[in-house]
Image (cartoon, rainbow, N blue to C red):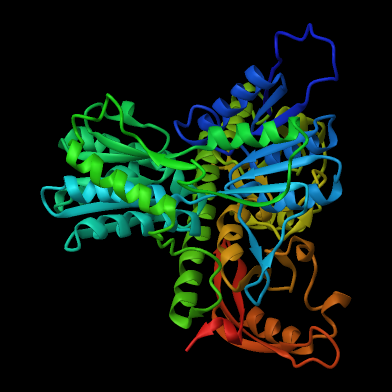
Length: 585
């Protein structure tokens, strides 16, 4: 269920037009993340207090809720909708085009590019806020290098992505600017959104870095950074925080924090709407615009000698004046090496397989716990509710009788499906025949998105088949957070295909649910169809095809590399396609 709270200005006694209504939708971490969600909330509360606006706050824990929340906010009477996090970028692009009378803002907007590397300009009523994280990181890198006693410092990134590489690039450049011989140890927690929510992994990485000689480590890893602070406390080393002042995470051990002034950016965006001066487009905020900075206050002055502070302030002045340009190592990649592309494909394959296996393990455990139990009672519902909470891409989960009748369904909003007979579905026939786990093919769910379902058989205490426990999920929701941010800045398209030719995921959502072998859209491209038939027959490989954008133009040659993700005998072909000029020689 969406957690919605309404903050209303108390003093509305003065006569005048109705106050501006603003919806702020938090990123998956929600309020209390100690990072940019909390910072956005502070900025919104300031707007409520000082500008007299009404604010509606929405927290979501699931991708389906994010979609619904964004759509409902756009359809409501709110005049302005703010999304915190790059996951809102594409969704808000579409909503802004559909609602030209409303204003949209995305914090950490992820810009889109065409295949030639040209920026796709967002709608005029959408402001995409980006920050020069590299500039603030440059300053904390200089502090780290000047403070280090071992001559070695570290960096921990969350998801390997353009935004986080800006943190790393600035940090390394700042450190080397003041101490050219400084040694650097940099690690990323992963390539998906989960890399921002893994404190245990952050702890393991930090401990390893400290043991290998780094005495100051900077993180840009969201909740994963909590593991760094734990390691700093335990090993009596120094850490550097990100986004907001994180000194409370490890008192006396936090050297400084790189400030990303999201609160100020949110307030300024709302204020421009109140004053009628709102403008869309990309907005980039750096040191000059006070969009980034670093912490230097009573809590950390004892850790930063005045000589270091003065040296860093001099660097800050050079950046603001334009005398010093900080490298950001980000932006849209217009070309990749073949080795990078294959590495990307292998890492995606591994991440997707691990995520599927994790859900499958949860279902396997649930089936064991439900053995011999009433599959429609409170105990069964408790198991289903736990499954639903633990896997944010699940649409619903259910217990099914040995004759194919849905007995218990969670969440409560989907209980109207209880009593439905699904015994005739192909995957259920397979389950009844084999009494082994099954993964279905993709189908159009009554809940809306194209979905698949995993069933695990349940047995009685005397090993008689008594039904199944299952989870329905949309591959689109499972994969969008993994693949979307990667495809947004690389010259590639990424898709997953069943061996019957059905597209179960594509960066271009309009192609999800189409069949390459039979849909009229693909008939003008016989080389693509032939390649996909080869893909259907082979678990991995590479190939190519040509197509024409327009009649009379030269054909575009594309190369495709693919691997297989598989569960319970149902294979998905994971493919990365790229134009010939997108590969470095």
